[in-house]
Image 1 (cartoon, one colour):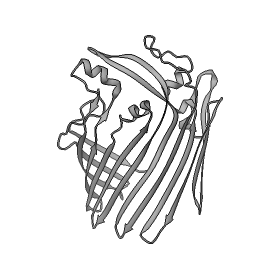
Image 2 (cartoon, one colour; image 1 turned 180 degrees about the vertical axis):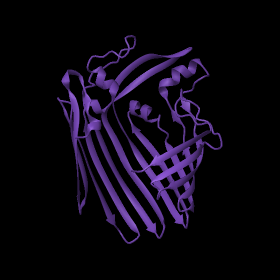
Image 3 (spheres, rainbow, N blue to C red; image 1 turned 90 degrees about the vertical axis):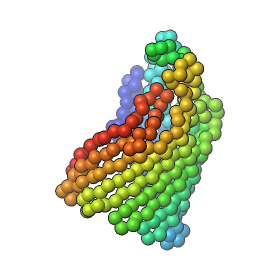
Image 4 (cartoon, rainbow, N blue to C red; image 1 turned 30 degrees about the vertical axis):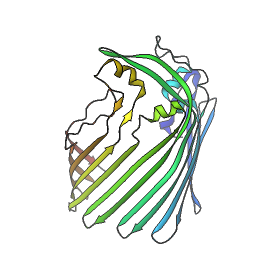
Length: 298
């Protein structure tokens, strides 16, 4: 039983899950069962890797899940048990008790040569009959006010395309990854998914100055996102916007390892160039920052 999945619900309901993993020559299987005391959910996945040649391989992944309410979201969980989150903006809970289905598949092609590799993956992900919370938020200075809140059933999906590559040259290592998502589905699903940047990229470079001393630089790119919940607020004040702009962020770090690298101490400078990094319409501006970290492996 996975203790992290245990939740106590109303009327004595408990959400518990039992997980198993099985590996055979034909593939890796994983499965789980969960219940809230009234309904039963499940998760099942299979992964297979085929060596096409010495340098080429193809990986296939498929998964399906049926989620009970407690796994969909905390707002729905408490609302169907009678909790009024906001007396002035009650949530409509009709048909929220239905379970959601998740379907996932992906194919990954990988090419490896000496110390370099290239990988391309593509696959769809579907959410069927899931619960989505739709809010209309307006600005009533100096605070936000939820104008209306409603839970609706929604279905949709994302076609995910991922490309990555990397190489090692002596003491230097570099890698790059690009993710792009093509969304489809009903209006509620597309509105929710537009909060996630459609395109993102990560580039990293590491260099070993000595066996226990290395430096690293990492750069991120995220395309913009749209939060339709905040359109009403954006129309009444120029302080906030329903659109989060794209950004590029670069971090650098220096790390020193001790005791056969069982202990390492690092100092990082985040957002080196002081880019305007904001992740939410009302979120903080993540400016340049210096941080230190001590990690111990036991």
